Each structure stands twice: as C-alpha cells, then as structure tokens.
Length: 151
Picture 1 (cartoon, rainbow, N blue to C red):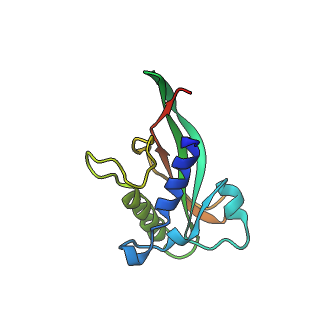
Picture 2 (tube, rainbow, N blue to C red):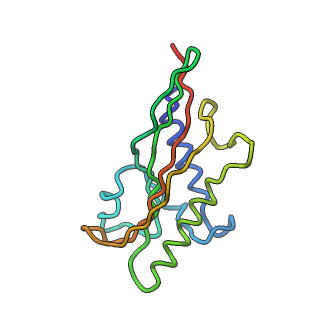
C-alpha cells in the first residue's frame, strides 16, 4: 500500500461530498479531478465550478523510530467560470473547500487512511482568469502528514 497515493485518493473522495444537499454552497463535488489544473481548465468541455487536486511541493521529511514522517503536498484548486459576480462564486467555492476539509478538534479525520495523521493548510490565494485560462481560480495548499514505516 502506498500511503501517499491513498492519502491523495482520500482527499479527492472527501472533496466529492461538496454539494448543496450536504449544506454546501456549490455542487463542485460532482466535478473533482486529479491532475494538472491548466490541462483540465483548458479542456473545452469543462463544467464549472470544479475542483482539481494537483500534487505540489511537500514539507521536509523528519526521521522517527523505524519510520519517516513526511507531509506530501497538494494544491486543491477550485475554478469558476468568469462572468458577472464571479468573485462571489469563487468565494463560495473557497468556503466550501475549506469547510469540507476542516478537521474536528483533537480527532483523527475518519476520511483519511490509517498512517495519514491529519491535514495542514497553506495560505489560500485567488487568481483572476488570464494567462491562457478561461476560469478564475482559488488555490489552497494542503499537506497530509504521513508516517512511512521502515520495510
């Protein structure tokens, strides 16, 4: 079992719960992708809002007893089509992503596999459409602290 891959898959599955029936503002959970955001957004058939989980730089690993603690990094990128009031739509999507991933205080997130110890966040940042992209985006860096046992 590869805990890095399992953590990524769990993150994608968790984001899939975002829909109004679950109390969220958007239905972006029905359009969660893994890959490179620029390729997915440039696809002419892309529907919005959407979420892309893209691998990013992780945090430095630290050694432990017969293990290594690493924190693989991912960009969770939300995208909305550009139009009237797209700023509000982007704010709604950012809020949905953050609310979906909020860990319960002092509790292990049940949606993560055993060995992935939780979730950490970087600073969210919004970007207007441009540079060849037809959508406005919000980028939320996340890290999944993971204990890798020695073979």
